[in-house]
Length: 391
Image (tube, rainbow, N blue to C red; front, side, top):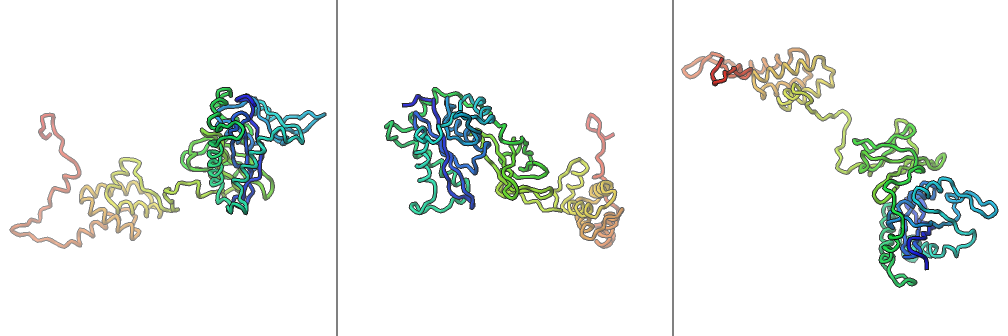
């Protein structure tokens, strides 16, 4: 029986179809506890292998002494006199995590029989067949959820050899394994990009690509996979549970970004071109906008018309509102906005016309023609001395 924390084996199986594209199942197996990991992949590129191994180490809670796999090109570039020549990037990856990557003898499946049996079990449970009547997975997220459910189920079952549940033995493995670094080995994941805090888009080679909005302000890595029509832009990000692929787009062109609507929050306010939120950025602007709805409309329409000396005219409207009242000036501003009256003196002229339309007054026993002082009092308040008296 293998020692705890010594061996991790991994292999691949053909995954189900998602969105018309064939997937790959990464299956890993700890030799002592028989704890199994199943993670779906979109491809078997070097970056994907490093990404899934980092996730595997974090899922099992440590790094084993040896990682055993087949003679994939991502691990072995060639054989010379029967000796495998390692991929230099894989050697760098292994050194970073404190493990050693080994490969099986060619044409010797017995050396990794445990993991091949795990591949068979995972494929039987996850891949749609005529016997289990499962359809294609609707999304890659659905496949990931199915893999997670499969791992939970199989690791909580008693193994036929150990007569123990793998979940109960994993603790003994963790005691012997190396700790997982906080930061993933990112050299193969592509170029680093910072997602802006206000929009889930990253720039890469003259194009823009969307990422999930949860990554606002985070670091992601972008790389190119494939050529010609099969070329894809792959974006990955590191999290607590390892590195994950977060987006995959076709090649974008300048001015034509690649956007996935699911990357944006469902409650995000839809922005309509030409409709702007009116927000005061100074005391003068705040005083004008406080006049009322008509002031808001005047500002939008006057700005759209390219009106000159707008700030001066806004100040004059504020002065008029203090003299004649906000409600009256607000109504006049709304009228000016509706009829495009944005010239110098237009608001004062409309206001004078509105006052004239209110009709003439006549003196009597209960009414006087003398002008009141209430409007003038609004212009300024009398100064007072320290003892409360007027100056």
